[in-house]
Image (tube, rainbow, N blue to C red):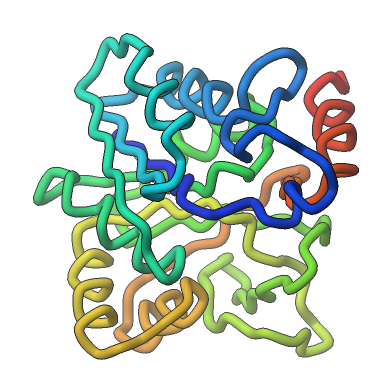
Length: 234
């Protein structure tokens, strides 16, 4: 499995709330947030790792360059206007075929949940993508997901429809067909990751929702303690 991390955001809310470190280097249980993700990926049949950081994140770039990796590692340093564009830039490092999993750097989940998710995605030859979802709403602007009885995603919504059980968790398992859609979205002036996800549905890709017990986003200083408690829970 190829893995990628979007770590190109500014983390402005954390800075405003007194957190001095760049978001990817914020410590969770004594470990930088981005290193925790990398370690989880390496334990889940990683074939390659790719990370994008913005041009201002010299501290993050230097930290990543100081690490040693047992698999090919690609570092993209580029400022982009959105996470969708960051995805596009880092995706150019992927193999032309095969599956990959992409997450944002502040997406916090349990390692066991993630391992089961990857195993399910790897073993499903009928799906073009597996989206990590959760019924735990911890996002200021959640992306609601409609699914059918087989957990196939039928729609992505900015507002709940009344029957929504899940929201997007920022974990995207996709294949090469999804990269073709991504390129068309960038060329067509589409913005925002959620609009790209809508395009995947519109173009007929088979996407399945995979529920995680809980997924936490670290956007505010208070989220750091919440994430640490969640990680340490048995």
